[in-house]
Image 1: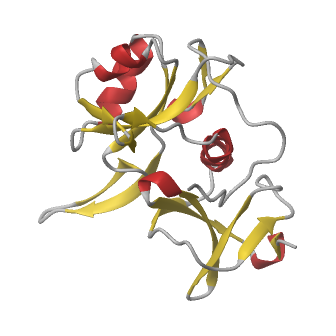
Image 2 (image 1 turned 180 degrees about the horizontal axis):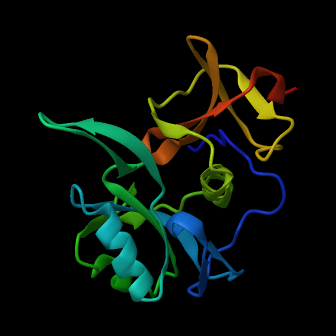
Length: 196
């Protein structure tokens, strides 16, 4: 069902209700065997508000953003947009799902049938690593096929993903397969090697 298109070095962060908030709204959490990360479907353009509401309710939340230039008739402005438009990641136990679903702006939990499907912690760890690295990133079309690569040096060393090339730059694409969405991070060619 899920392809691990990216793996972070070291153990994946585990889920808990107590969070330590890092720069740019990222939450790293302490170990808890009961909670899992889930993708919540949210109303359009409500990702940041849902992220904030979930945190106020005591749940770990993750809504990574990227900077994009928006052009209006009279100006150009750089704005923060969600990497996964229409989704916010949250960590909660089965009993806490009611709190998550009761949050304003949340429509449902991504799953199969009526059963919520957890996101693998390796994929959450990969998203957190990319976000905290501070490298340029943006949403990327979902890819299933392609050469798998590993970042061998730099702040993303140990990360695995799919190699994509755009003109003269190389990108490692990290996918959340259940959502059919991907994120690309720009890397130097000498920092990556094929996975064996």
